[in-house]
Length: 162
View 1 (tube, one colour):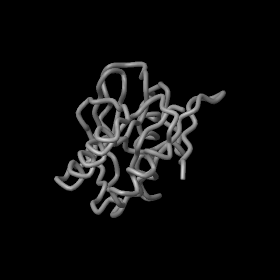
View 2 (view 1 turned 90 degrees about the vertical axis):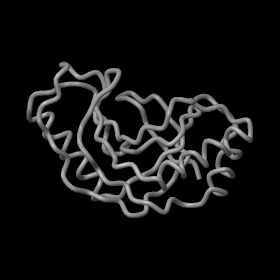
View 3 (view 1 turned 60 degrees about the vertical axis):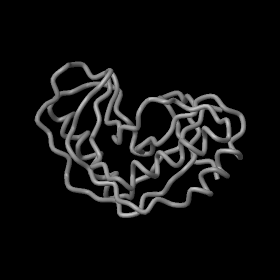
């Protein structure tokens, strides 16, 4: 199973991300846009791992997040355009706690530094991002979830494992 731990924003924040995508599309940007159902903020990517129950125990032991997700600007790296998320000490501490518990339990995960963002699209047809600003949106208490990633006919399908 291809797994990752994510923060799931509320409907208002998802709407704001979708409006940002719509503004990019209106500006003529083509690429592989993240579907509404797949909008999330990744905390830790474990990749191929066949013991989701172990990760669920870790996630439950860390509790639900007690901080906000607030959208902030648009950026890019490595062929991915994203909407930024205002970082807080609490957000970084929560991600660090989850990653430390994964490490302690011997669960493999991508060790790249945590960079709070929500992917808008992959493989855009240009290098310059048009001047777009995401609408104000704040998810007060995001939901932390273990997600499974499967390849579908029209792209990736993310499903929460409970």
